[in-house]
Amino acid sequence: MRGGAAAVDGSTARAIAPRLDDEELFGRQPASTDELPDPRPLLENLTRCVIEIIAGARDLEQIARWVDDTVYTTLLKRVVVSAQARQAARRPAARPVFTLGSVVLCEPRDGVVEAVVTVHGRARTRAVALRLEGLDRRWRATAIHVL
Image 1 (tube, rainbow, N blue to C red):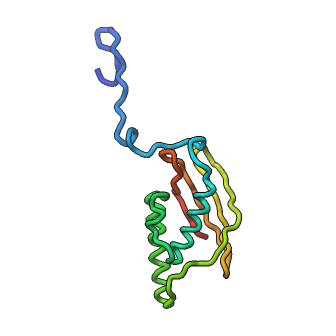
Image 2 (image 1 turned 120 degrees about the vertical axis):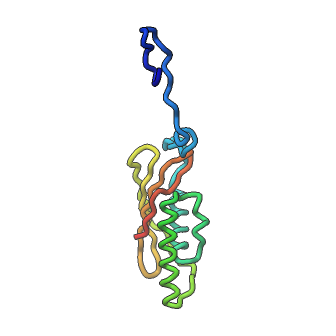
Image 3 (image 1 turned 180 degrees about the horizontal axis):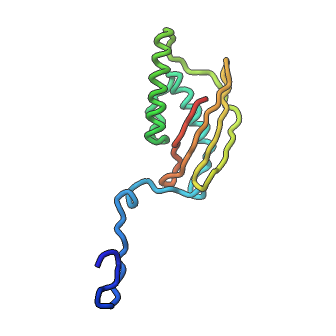
């Protein structure tokens, strides 16, 4: 008997639960917003770090635990391009001077926060768009875009 089907002779058989694969048992587990801390401090810190990483003043490795693999790879490409541009212009990496502006949050579904943080620098104002998802009872950035 497979999958909990009744026996051929008409007697009832005990239903067998389908097997769970390893990903369901050991993979990342989504978390509800109630199980997660306030996302604002993480949004502000990630924004600060990302701006400094792109400027070459901070190492990308420092935020690896808060971002997923796709975000890490995307930021790595951006870091390489920024470093090449600085090298071509013969400018050294320097800590940027900026202040954080408003943080606009929305919650499209439980356990997900999307936000835009404005960053005011000397020459221009930028926006950093972030998406945080609750996984394993902590926030992880699944998208970061510097505009």
